[in-house]
Image (cartoon, rainbow, N blue to C red; front, side, top):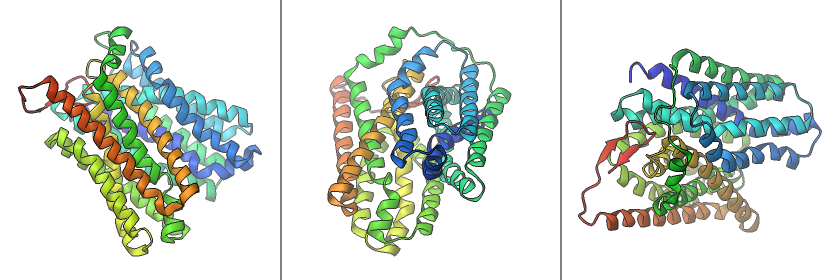
Length: 404
C-alpha cells in the first residue's frame, strides 16, 4: 500500500470534495433561496434533484465510461464538480443553478464507482477492504467537516465564499488525481452485455434490496437528526451543531472499525450490522427524551451508522465481481434510492405520529434488511450443499473482499 497511499489519498480528497458539493448545500439552503428569490421548497429541489439523478443515471453513466482511461474519467469528474461550484458562486438564476446540480450528479456515481475499483487496483489484493475504507473516509470527512464548514463560511463571510471553498477542494482533488495516479487504461474490456449480466442473477437483486433497506434504515432516522434532538430530546441549536460534528468525526473511525470487522469475518459482519442498527434505534427511542443519556448515545449511533457504507458496498460487490465498477455504480444508485425512501417514510411518520415514533421506522427497515440478508445466505447454502465454509479471499481487481 506504500506506493499507492498518495493515490488513494487523492481519491479520498476527491470524494471529500464531491460530498461537500452534494451535501454542503443543505446547510445553506436559506441563503440560496434568498439569493435566487425562490421559496424554500423550490430551493429544496437543488438537493432532491441531485439524489434522483444519481439514483437513475448511475449504472448507465458508469457503463458508458467503462472503456475510457480511469485517470481521465476521475479527473474529468473532478473538473465538472469544480466548475459547478464556481457556477454556484457566481450565479443568481435558479434555472442555471439547477442545471449545474444535474450535471455533476451525472458524473457523481461514475467517480465513486471508478475510485473504489481504482483504489483496490493500485494496491495489493489483501489490502482491498483497507483501500476501500480509506476512500470511504473521504465521505465521512465530508459529512464531519466539509458540510459544516460550508455552512460556517456562508454564515460568517458569504454564500459565494462557501461555494468557492467547494470549488477549491474539488480542484485540489483534480490536481491530486493527475499528480499521483498513473495512466489507467481499463484493462480487459468487458462487453456491455457481460456487465449487465450481473443483473440476471436473482441473488444480485436480493443484495440490491438489502442495500436499499439498510440505507432506508440509516437515513429514515439520521435524516431528521436535528428535528429529533430538538423536539424530542430538547437540545438547543448550538448543541445540535456540535453533536453533528461529533457524529461525523466518530463516523471516520467507525468506518475503519467496520473494515477490520469485514476482514475478520465478512458474512458475520453483514449479518450483525442490521441487528446493531435496530438495537441503536431502540436505545434512541428509550433515551430520546433524556438529554444526558441521549448525548452520550450519539457517538454509539454514529459508530454503527458509519458501517452502512462499507458493509453494503462489500455485500453487493460479492455478487458483481465480474464487473466491479458497474457493481459499484449499482451500489451508489440504490443506496441513494434507499436514502430517498427512508427520508420519505421518516417524514411521513414524523408528520403523522410525531418525532417520538421515528426510531421505530429505522428498526422496521433494519429488520427487513436482516430478513433479506438471511434469505440471500440461504440461497448460497442451497447452491453449496456441501457446506464449504465461507472464507474471505481478496478480490484483486474489484472494490470488495470476495466471499467464497
